[in-house]
Length: 132
Image (cartoon, rainbow, N blue to C red; front, side, top):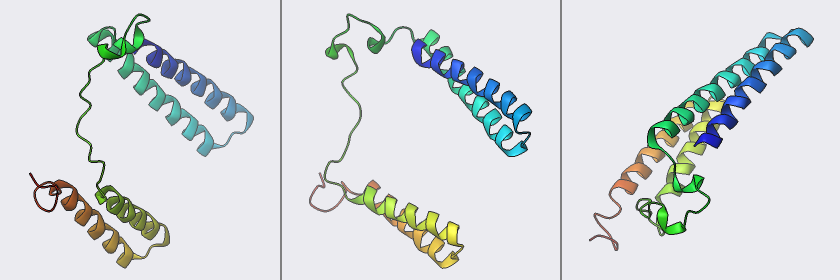
């Protein structure tokens, strides 16, 4: 994680310098604020990855002599046949569009679709053809 940490740390320095230059050249407060917040967010991520990298030690991804088998083989359980993430995505899209156009009935529809999709995701393996 050392490379990722230094990449974000140097990015935060770059964004801070660009924010200062932007303030003196343009004098606009919105762009300066956005660049300053970007520098702060990059510094947070850089600090976290550097701190975590010191705490956990060297990962297999950071070693040159590492093999594929050195990594943790268990990445979790993924359902390759599930349509429920699509339902959740449609609900999120509907909610975002509804907020953009301030149509509150569509916000309600989108939130209900998200809840319906989340319930379907949770109970997918408790009933139906894939129940165990």
